[in-house]
Amino acid sequence: MKPSFYDLNYSDLEMLLKQNNLNSSAAAVLFNWHYKKKQSTQCYENIAKDSLIFFQDNFDFSLPEVDTVHESKDRTVKFLFKLKDGHKIETVLIPFHNKYSICLSSQVGCAMNCSFCFTGTQGLKRNLTASEMVGQFLQAWRWLAKNRSGEERVLNIVFMGQGEPLHNFDAVKKACEIFLAQHGTSIGVQKITISTAGYIPGLKRWSLEIPGVNLALSLHSPFTEKRNELIPINKKYPLDKVLSYIDKIPLNKKQFITYEYILIKDFNDSPEDARELGAILVGKSAYINLIPFNSFPGSYYKRPDLDKVEKFKEVLDTFKIPTLIRSAKGDDVLAACGQLNSKN
Ligand code: SAH
Image (tube, rainbow, N blue to C red; front, side, top):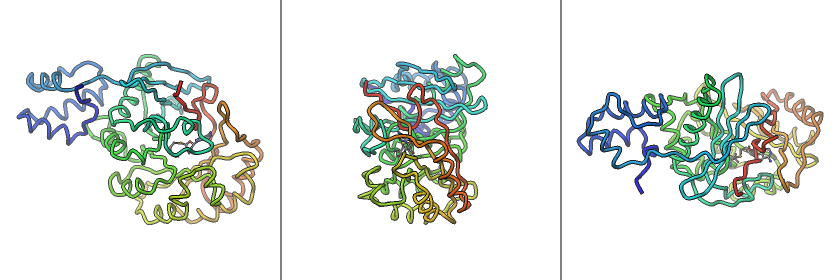
């Protein structure tokens, strides 16, 4: 099988052209064609014939196939993509003011086995390649251009779909490099967020190798026993180690860490939980996203009532940490956080 064109970052492409004695200016032309203009045909403008033939002969330009599309009442769109080996993954477009954020999957299934997450019940099947992540973006964009013409503006990328992105570091890094490349989609570095359950080996690489990309940590409980139950890798990479590691990372002015906190009824939603959460985050360059638990078929936990959620936020407000209650977009089509499962 031919390698995918969409696995090449800009410098890979330049090097490949040089090695094959082709004009290296084709790198900018190809990035512009496939990522800025997002054309689905072969590039035929401003490119020498020998370069064009080289790519046609040696590279695969196909993208993950759209299997099904679910549109939610709130205009969230959930895609089920079919990969070449038959595995399926999900991607979600989340609307805000006629623009979209895209929530990308980084693995087929996930190895983290978090007790509150639907994807975890699938286990890890395999890592996605960079081209499969870039492909989710391009296919979703093309769907918007066709079905919601004029609205094809995908301005934020979050690695919060299926999988643990820091557990598939090399491919996620390459996908980020492709998104950031100036001749391509040129997404601003502060518009990309990687969400992690706290996988320390990947965290170490994130700060050194993709500086500027935002980080979100799935925190969910400040208490060891509760966090162990929710996120089993907490036993190997405990929260205090993760937080002290994050604290040492120099952030640029526009950069901040988002701490995600799922609120589960009668489990981690008491004022005491909120106080302890505030105490461990106070003084940090932090935002808190409160995510009321989203149920899925067979889920054991429950979502707290709204007044409990609001009370939790009020306690955090006393610590002066900016906190947002995240509304569940797309939950009528199982597209909200933690509801992605592409087993069937
Ligand atoms: N593995 C990464 C990214 C995937 S999860 C991580 O753990 O961060 C993306 C976000 O969805 C995380 O904050 C996760 O905790 C949250 N999530 C998972 N299941 C959920 C559920 N059932 N209800 C609400 N949020 C959930």
